[in-house]
Length: 131
Image (cartoon, helix red, strand yellow):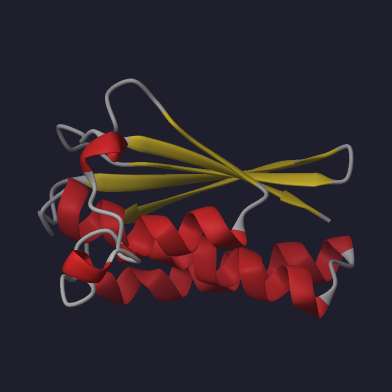
């Protein structure tokens, strides 16, 4: 099963993605535990795409793709920004970075998803959730 959602780059549009996740996970009979991981990981990725990727430019879009296959849900979030290098994000668990805000979202996404992968440009992330 494949479902796609396209939203404008406004934080208010996170509700559209949340509603899509609610419908998808309910229809697929996904457990509450998995639902929570999918919801938080996806909303964090979409928020990053809106704020950091597209710089909240309402003329730019964020695409969210949900692919349900073989007991996995693969969520791919792509923005129209220039991208970034995930390897350059500071580790928020290191003492010298504890008070920095940068890097927490990517760290959280990597802990919630079973697999996470960024494209070469850094404007698209795919998260795999085993369900």
